[in-house]
Length: 66
Image (cartoon, rainbow, N blue to C red; front, side, top):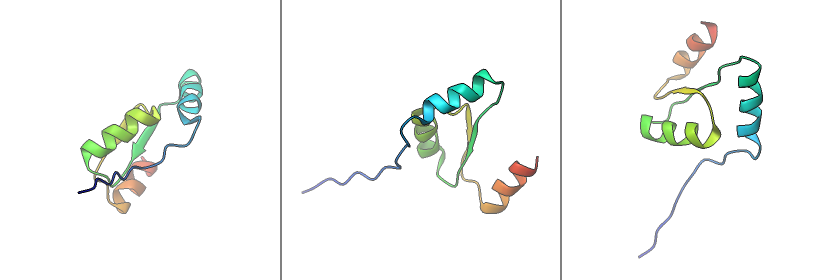
């Protein structure tokens, strides 16, 4: 029996970059096609302020336009 863990790689220093943006008054939002549980985990690890999960490409574009 074996176990395989797959995980998105969070770039080193990204939390600090998001913190700098927050100090400048910029809110960070991750828009992803991942399911809500996965999106929440990645958002917390990366340090973003909010996330939108299960977004299709057209949803992502619409969010950017808003």
